[in-house]
Length: 169
Image 1 (cartoon, one colour):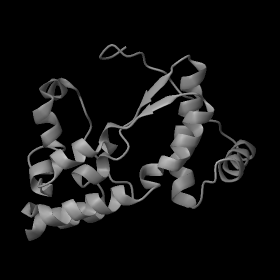
Image 2 (cartoon, one colour; image 1 turned 90 degrees about the vertical axis):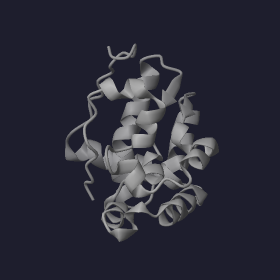
Image 3 (cartoon, rainbow, N blue to C red; image 1 turned 60 degrees about the vertical axis):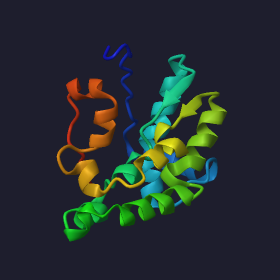
Image 4 (spheres, helix red, strand yellow; image 1 turned 60 degrees about the horizontal axis):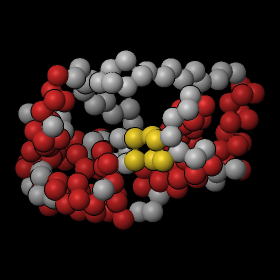
């Protein structure tokens, strides 16, 4: 239990047959396309099912934070360049990402959450938060501490042991 929330371990299936069945279901039943989408959603799909089986009714996600704060390889490279303190390019990146209907697998998450009668909350997709982030450069977001504007707005997060973002791309 942490911050008043119960920890729910999710055990992912192993074995080639189980993986092939899962990939087939994600493609046929949910319309997943492409290696990255299937890989990224597979574990989430199992977590959503386990969450529903545990009796939860609401799921809150951190999906979309990457675009707001400039996580990822290319923004990090650009952020460490002389452009790092110019918010214009990061605002354009945010606008581009959130203009896409399926950004952060929105379509897959909606299909599965609807099927499981789960309410999905995506705070990082809220237009008010995006507007509050407008004008924040990569340096102002990540220069001193990753996601600094978020920690400034919610000081209680400072006591959490949060691992530094790792880009696995």
